[in-house]
Amino acid sequence: MGGADARTGRRHGPCVIVDPYSSGALFAEALRSRGVPVAAVVSSPRPPEAFASSYRPQDFPDVIVQDGDLDDVVRRVRALDPCCVLAGCESGVELAEQLAPRVLPDLSNVPELAGARRDKSLMAAAVRTAGMPVIPQICTADVEEAADWLRREGLAGADLVIKPPKSASTDGVIKVAGGTDWRAVFERQIGRVNQFGEVDDRLIVQEFVTGTEYVVDTFSHDGKHSLVDVCAYGKIDNGPHMAVYDTMRWLPPDSPAVPELADYVFGVLDAVGVRFGSAHVEVMGTADGPLLIELGARPHGGGQPRFNRNATGDSQIDRTVRWLAGGELPQSYELLTHQMCVFHVARRSGTVRNTAVLEGIRTLPSHHFSVQNLSDGDHVDVTKDLVDSLNFGFVILAHPDDEQIRRDYQAVRALERRLVIGEP
Image (cartoon, rainbow, N blue to C red; front, side, top):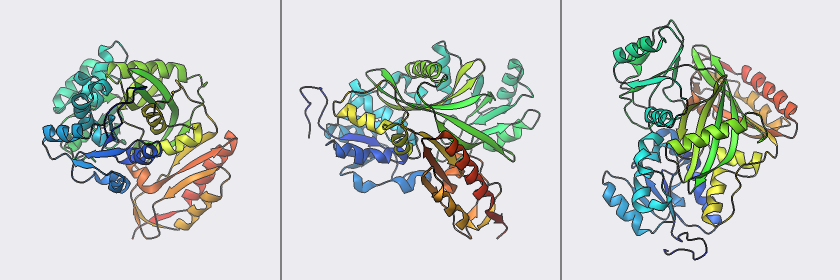
């Protein structure tokens, strides 16, 4: 272990994954298959509950636990002589951003902008400072300060979004329709403990903007950015719960939306100081152009790289591995087959029956993968965010004929409607 390759200059030590949960769990096998050893740093003794099922500690010969002594963690990581330090999922971003500059400064993001790669308020401020448009917003712990800002901006009575500055998977993100009591929502959410076990001691209040929501996944090295995939989200209202995930559709690289999205996203990456590794960037395509929703300085979660590999033959995990192995990387991607993710939606809370009807999903012509986490007699919560959707399950449809996918999407929803959700 140790030393560097004379040809590439890259080190032979392990790739250190900070919080190898969610899609970050996919690094271990992919790296080992190319002869790159792995090690893990975990930001707490136990993973956040939302990611616990994805953690495979047996994949890592070395697991270093952050116990509050950052200097000790730095010392132990340096002793491994690693080839890189990467965040596996959102819970590991802050620690990865603290470790990388102290261990491998040539393979780190801009240290002075680390906060802008995790805190959505600082993120927007950095993008605005770079001269790029962002969604009008304020981040505060004071409901009256938010009210004053709304009046100044002419947004009193407008549709709003209230969300924590640090979270993921739409956890704690609430749309407030104009004319309803946004103050009550603010007061209810402030001080809430989010899915990472952190207290939401401030909240972002922002204008609700409309358009098509996109997710742009990238890989960067030496400050050069490349597109790994671009997808468009479809969202629906589920009763009082606004903008619930319905679908995610992979776009071909020659889609008219892609060039403008790529230019904007690459500017965002520069503005927040991304120079190395994966990023997951969500953008609203409005009539006036793209606006940043948020950025994650880590791979797209939920195991998406496995499905992206089916659609494009590539993924953020694969590009990372190829770069570490000295391979050449493309600047964009190709779409090998039409593909859509359909997120299951529970229309109400209650005890679920007739779950056997969902077995019909696996017989659909475009069925590629599906998971349903419900059995008869289970309690299901009404779907209000992405965490609820993933707890229920989802379907990946892939087929050369895009119309077949659209027909099978309707079939999934028809089967879903046959579920019986009622009182225990």
